[in-house]
Image (cartoon, rainbow, N blue to C red):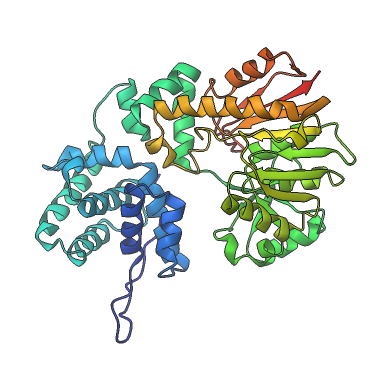
Length: 449
């Protein structure tokens, strides 16, 4: 079903250029995304120069995220009706058509005439007036085909057809099917396109739960509890945390429920002044949650660069997580001071991110088979170093936000093959989606002998 909103026309700034519309700003962001900038970073860069509010901001976000998530599908639809294929179009024209096609095919509150008219105006405004007839014709033919039910390229249930239907690169479709089967993959891919809900946990070490819930309600943010995890909530009405006073006060932390479940499992049975080392911690969410779950723990949160560690420090200050210390350290380098010292090592390592495509859809356009192979090598390099940090009887907690068995169970088997650790229970592989949405996530807790 199509959902969405439209924007009102904008007046010109006095003595200045015409103020950018949501569609024009979205086009600027999409061009950056196509050039390799991450979606979130591109959106922030564009909005840092010209702010949008209300419905305009909503349309901007919807266009940036929706067009990126459905890029393969949109290009296939456009290629059905355009004489010039998307791959050979000027980037500006290609992305104007993608935005127009997305609104026509997947949104329902914007009149067709308005979509076509705004797309043509944008074409002219960006200096491509000679191509306005081309843009107009392609979009009107898409409307005709949509109404006739013939806008989607014909195809069966093979990987190529599923790639177009769910806007997933074909090589990834083949891998997912090999891992989990065609039926499960179709449901998962559909959940990615529906987007992931906003989930968070409350900083009840600093504030009473009732106070936080009321404060958020006063901000127009309504919470519902997750059915499985007591500290996990889903939030409606939270569109921009930077504008939330409760966020600034450290009342809550945005984190997927899968990650919360993992930290709940990691901390199970631990208490008192245990020593915890989080080796790849930025931006610090897992360390922050552990600070609440294990208030007596001494937690060291590390990452590779000063920039990443500064993000951890920002969260330490905002949440007043006094039992967390952040420092720069390369996880591939052995630190003699930590050998045999840790009660718990958190190894949430760099991974392919295939479980979080509902939140970060641009990952699927970047990842390659070579990347998957190199990530496995990096993970094992880090694991070979940090296993020695765990004291006898202590725990190594390995986790990723991917669903690739080689990065997950394959690495657990590698740890076990070293003969120093045992599994207390089977590792957990969470698949994306479900009634109460979960990101794809893997975790395993191993005890040192």
